[in-house]
Length: 375
Ligand code: F6P
Image (cartoon, rainbow, N blue to C red; front, side, top):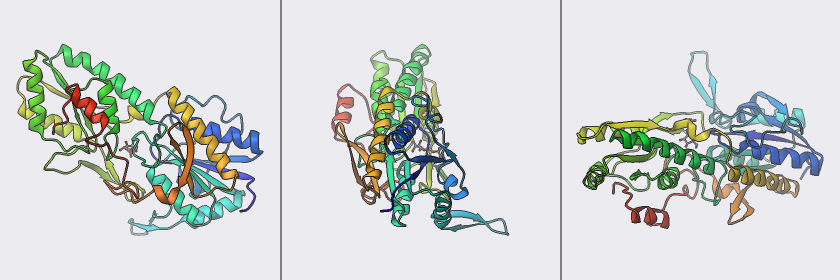
């Protein structure tokens, strides 16, 4: 492999807390340990296409460890292997423009990429590796749905946010005898709803892995009424679906490696519940992007930093086409080919996403303390 003197960083996909810790780890290790030059492409793969980048030196990454978001900005569109080109008639034609990215890298003398993102972003990273570019991926997602790693950074901070929000929502639920429906993210998996819901004392948790029956949800609320508990908290994962129905899709985005965007099922559940329940007001809160923002938790800072350092060491020892990952307490790595996939709902990676086990310990623990899954 050609000697690496200069690397380019990309942050793609939805932002989350811990991204800046990864950038910090990579940049400082690159400069201090290997004497490399580092640049960061702005706005995900769009930066690679437009050759829009900033130099990352020690000053640029100073003091960013705890900050949410990404100093490089991000995009969860701009799939350079299926990029929209505006035609004269105003419509779009989708083209593979990845060679433009390669030319831009050559022009700037960038020898390798470190790509930080979730399934969609890492799928493109795999495709650049296939084109012969040395690439290392770093797994990011608040959804915790990447199967090859025990944990991604961003998830922990989101759980803290959900738990805090549920604690706060409890006060209105109690004071007004309301049923409070709280929608959380997670794509096609229920990790955020499950772990956040348990910690935040939800009464009902609806997740994609356990299709729900609204009558069962009503039964649980009535059971609480009989116990003298005249309020309820219902946590709904954005990918939750009824036993006899489909996932609620918000939007299809063609120029993204993850084409399907979810969100809004909580509103539907709220209106349907209100039609069935006459002794409580049912109100809806969507935690939405609040779950992605804010100061990174200690866990996400540390794991993000470790991922960054290991990604660089892996690249400099000749690794390419790999993704760093966490196994137990160790950071190891795996081939990108093994972990990325199609971006299709219910099939977010080659081997499927990492789903909640409906018969696993977490669900069992929740059921043991009386939490209903509407099943
Ligand atoms: O994958 C991260 C995530 O935040 C999901 O939980 C959510 O479905 C999606 O991104 C939202 O994407 P967008 O920013 O396009 O609304």
